[in-house]
Length: 402
Ligand SMILES: Cc1cc2nc3c(=O)[nH]c(=O)nc-3n(C[C@H](O)[C@H](O)[C@H](O)COP(=O)(O)OP(=O)(O)OC[C@H]3O[C@@H](n4cnc5c(N)ncnc54)[C@H](O)[C@@H]3O)c2cc1C
Image (cartoon, rainbow, N blue to C red):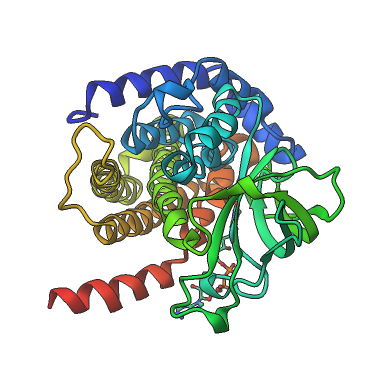
């Protein structure tokens, strides 16, 4: 951990102390019973960690995504894995565009309760029929005739924590695609009350492979009313605004993948030291050592890329103490996407090799690495897939460099 700032190391230390109260068996049981880890969220909120990257005047800590990435890495690395991280992370990344683009009054009303832990937020972008083609999303927000708000109609899918959230960051179309100059225009970002008791809103849980403690959902909007002041920033400019959340999400998820990979390697190396067959610990065989050693080096390389991306994200913010106007949002996007890609692949290698080096016990739930392996697919395919990152870097970045 050398080279990290005092703040990052303090975050790591404090988060590990809190997470030590949540054993491996807690996470195994919550995965098996598909039960939400409310206790972790409550413990982190109690000590003020949910607002780590939100402004101090609202009760947050005023730190950045560099420190928040360390927080999420530490949560995952403690053994909480992706499930633990997913129960927290939207409250950190999805609130970034709200914090940056909402009016002072909106920030005050919307973010304080997230920081105290009274409310939780979910992030509503993906749709069943448009998938990664975000700019074609079909959910609409139509102004009501009396001008008091909008009615939302459409569907979202894979929305994490929708069963427990009181708020949602929603991306919806306010001007039809045919009427805008560019497809990125005409989308608006809203911070809405997510109230499943109200008419026109429904969430259905999706059964899934990993991270089962945290619910993922199909969400249905049918003329669901949202008041006018749910709109964040200007109508039609939502895509540019929400990118501030998406880039933060990629950095956090990269940190989570790293944490999961390191946790898996720790389990595998502990096992390799103590499991004796053919008269010696299996870890004395280079066929066991080398795959774990190379997985570790890949995690280390991805760690540098991840914290570089988080630093660029922070330093591109005009309110940051080390603001650097030469850092463009495009550069932040390339760095955050690259970090997410590399960390996710390194985590997969680490988890897969950990399972394999533990032989049959790698496959047993009570040794935990099978759970990590199931969970490590999420950062590989979400919030954006490996292929789309390759497309972005290949078409936009390599082209402009060479
Ligand atoms: C556990 C989990 C939690 C999630 N949580 C949330 C959440 O809270 N909020 C939210 O909004 N979303 C969430 N998502 C959604 C996630 O971001 C999407 O699943 C992801 O963006 C992929 O979209 P899709 O599944 O529709 O894939 P599709 O768009 O259907 O793509 C399918 C495959 O085709 C490939 N492909 C498509 N087009 C191309 C192309 N042009 N070139 C190369 N390959 C291509 C893709 O890379 C992908 O591998 C979550 C997903 C999961 C699994």
